[in-house]
Every structure is written in C-alpha cells, then in structure tokens.
Length: 119
Image (cartoon, rainbow, N blue to C red; front, side):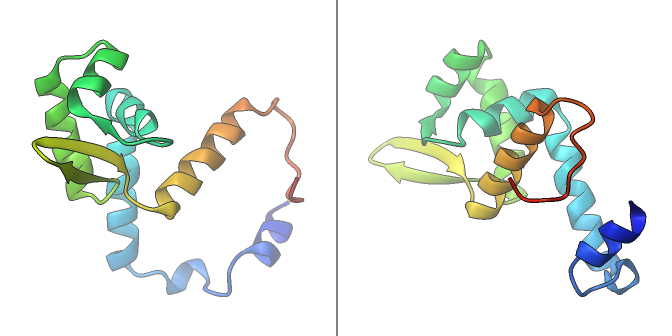
C-alpha cells in the first residue's frame, strides 16, 4: 500500500517540503483539532453566519464563539464579511471547504474502504 501511496502523491517528495510549510500546516490541524473550533468552522461551511447565530446553533456563549473565530481568522480558516453593523463568518476559501468536506466524507465511510480510486 505504501508504494501505491507514493506513486499517487504529488511530484514533491516529503523531503522537499520545508519546515516553513510543515509548521503552519501542523498549526492549522492543531486549531481544527479542538472540537469547539471544528464545530464553529463546520457551522460556517455551507453558509455565512453571524456570531450570535453560531452561538445559538451550537449552544455556546457569543464571547466564546468570538474568541475562537479570532483564532480561526488569524489562521485563515474562516473569513469575515461585514454587512452594515453585522459581521458574518464563512469558510475562508475553497481549500478549507474541500478539505473539511473530504474529511467529513472520510469519517462517514465504513472502516476498511481503503480504496484510493476516486468515487
């Protein structure tokens, strides 16, 4: 299986990836490893939402949601759009949306479906 993974990987080998790339990537996954932050990002995945709407939907305080959104914005995981006095949050870009959609699909798959073939 390792050889099939190697043959399907991008042209850059693991050795070619610098610490300048690996460290920010690890930081991104560390941020998403917090269940509360992950729930917040998933709430913003398909539509833009205000802090109050996120807090209400997830049963969290607005101040806690705001704190996590600051961290997520700094990491470019979510972005903010101001409309009048209201600020709405959504996934920062298609990379974040695609990664999370893929991970959601992955965890929903039954164990043992290791196929590398696209579905």
